Length: 234
Image (cartoon, rainbow, N blue to C red):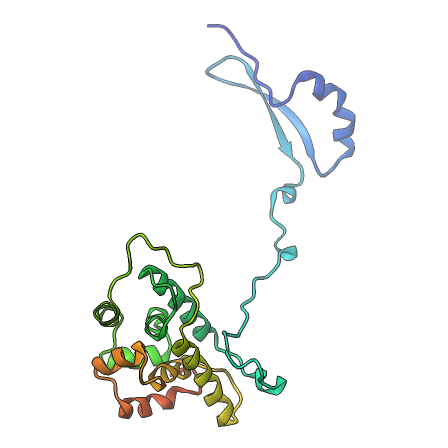
C-alpha cells in the first residue's frame, strides 16, 4: 500500500511563517507530527495555546430586551400616563395572540386571538381563572371557528396581523383602567382579559359568554388585577 503524507498546512508555508507564529502568542504554540496507523503517513496537528480565541465573548454581546408597551389608539396620552407598563406575561400573551391569528390564517388580531394568547401563555392568574371556569384553549378555538369560520387555505396572514378596532379598544380599556386606579405597578394579563370582556360586541366577549363567563365572574377576576401570579410561600 502506498504511503501518504497528511498536513493541515503546506511545508513551505510552515517554514516561511514559523517566525511569525513564534511571536504570536494568541495563535498556535506547537506543531506535532503523529503517525497514522492506517496509512503509515504522518498527520500534522496544531495545538492552540490560547483556547479563548475560539470562545464567544458573551460580555460584549447585546442583551435582548422587550419593549414593555403595546399598541394604543390614544396617542394624545400625557407623558406621565405613559409610565404604566405592560407586564412581561401580558407582552407574551399579546405575542401569542398574533401567532394564533396567523395559525388560523386571519388577516387581523381580534379579541378572540387576544383571548387565545392569554390561554396559550397560560401561567398568569387570569389564565388559570379562565380555565377553572370552563374557558379553555381548545373550547375557545372551536367557538372561534363556529363564530368566524375558517380562512382560505391559500391565504397567508401578515407577520404581525394588525389589531381589529375592538381588540385595540380592549387594550386601551386595560390601560385606562390601570390609570384610573391611581396605583403603581404593571398592566397585567387580568387587565387584558377584562378589556376583552368590556367589548360587548366583540368575538372574544361572545365566546367567553358562550363558555359560561359572566359579569359575576368578571368581578371575581378583578382581584387578580394587581399582579399576574400569586406567590406562595411555605
